[in-house]
Image 1 (tube, rainbow, N blue to C red):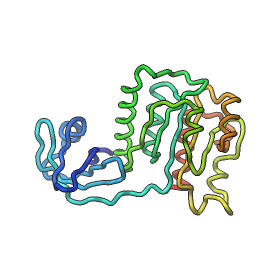
Image 2: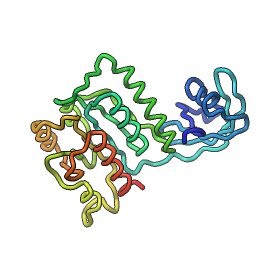
Image 3: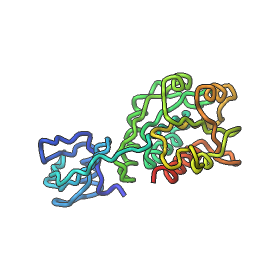
Image 4: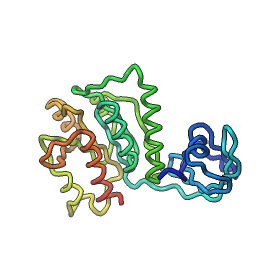
Length: 248
């Protein structure tokens, strides 16, 4: 539940007091109806959490007294999810669930079979996606809010982005993902990689040319099994497996 967790972009460590304004103040005072002297948790989105006591609830802001700071939570494995653009509701679902599961970055991808074009309204879309991600981490208790990038062309992403382990979810080829996660010997089993990038295709799937290009640039093809999954199902399934085997 998000009833006692709130997002604050910055905390002045020189003062014991902070203020919630805007949406977070509204959520505290009107939705959760937090009372004076109640204690809540604040997250700053960059790994820090603060236990705070409500001192004053005014019309436009809430005054809080910081009781203690919880040390910055370390990210052992930074996960970047590069998701091909899909329909709005599905995209929002993927962002929400991937933020709950602890990704560090979310990159919308423009691919050959992307059915959504959002160039003209990108600023409003990014703002909404960021709000969804913040609400999701409050729900999960994860103090890290993922960075959400503007949509990026597939070829540009492949050339610019680096990760210790780079994976392409494919319907046509590749090892079973579970085997990569559970393999022994010289694998990542005992020490997961410091960074992972996962590429998820659009509703119509990758083209053969796209898969060949991705695999020729250092990515490994992986499969989630014999069933063909919806793109949003594939994204959440892959992240849940990583969380289970490598993060928890």
